[in-house]
Length: 224
Image (cartoon, rainbow, N blue to C red; front, side):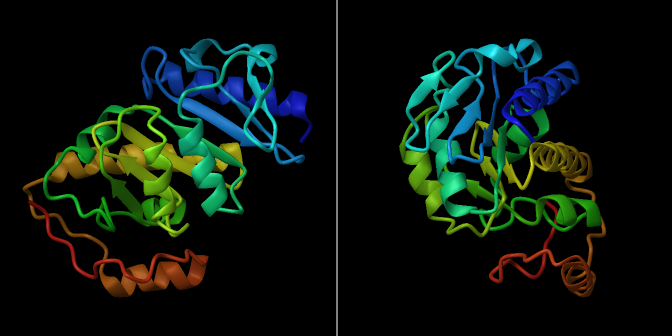
């Protein structure tokens, strides 16, 4: 896909996310890695609902601004995911309500922020890591992401929001939407002792769909 189409795709999907209330105001950011190793990324203080294709930030492979407006302050976050998830071509970060709420709960396991509730959560997101709180734009968040060693395509930033890497922008958007809906399900079912997928069912999904789940995931889950 040419750069003009990539720019249009960022704006189209960004507007869709915004219009459905998945990231309010000027929150959230999107990037796509281009064929030359550089990126297209949404500008700082930009609403995903009103992006202009011509004003997106164009970065070189070294992360320096080539054209467009100043990029989001979350460039270190995106950079760390591209570095550790080498197949990733897009990264989406939102401030979606249920995912933020999930990241604040005391019982959340950093290795598996959500239990295996549905097959499509595992198929779209794999497992989701939780990393500690860092102020928005703090370069230290990159070290936290790198510490995950590329095992996770979906991550919750504590008290902040989800970030997902995908092999295409559409794949990353679908995954972050699935993560938000799964977080909503978890909150709805919290304290009700729901029936999660069994280890055998998770293993079957992993083998059939080649999910490549991290090998050190907890094997049992309980609801609080």
